[in-house]
Length: 122
Image 1: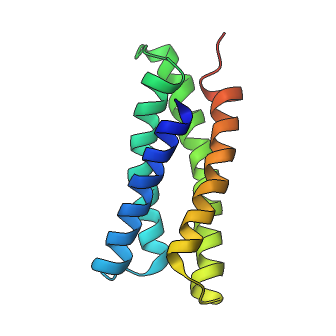
Image 2 (image 1 turned 45 degrees about the horizontal axis):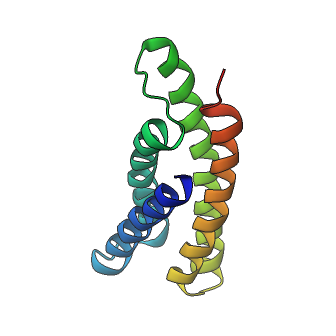
C-alpha cells in the first residue's frame, strides 16, 4: 500500500510542482514548497487511513501522529528544497528530472520514519 500511495503522493507533488513552476512561472523554491504542502496533506491522510491502518482520530493518537508525521516531513521537505535549489537554481539542471530524484529519496526516508516512529503498532 505504501508503494501505491507513495506513487500517488509523488504524482501530487510532481503535478503541483509542474503547474507552479512551468505554468504559473513561480520560482523553483516556492514551487517546491507548494508541491510539498499539498503532497504532505495527501500523504498524511492516505498513510494514516490506508497504509498504516491507524483509523483513530482520538486526541491522544493525533497528539502523537500529527507532530511526528509533520516533523519528519518538514525534515525531508528541507532536504527536497535543498536538492532542488542546488540542482536547479545553482547547477541549472533539469527540474523535472531532479524533482523525481528528490522524490525517490524523500519517499524512502519518509517510509522508514512512518514505519518505525509515526504509525508504529503499540
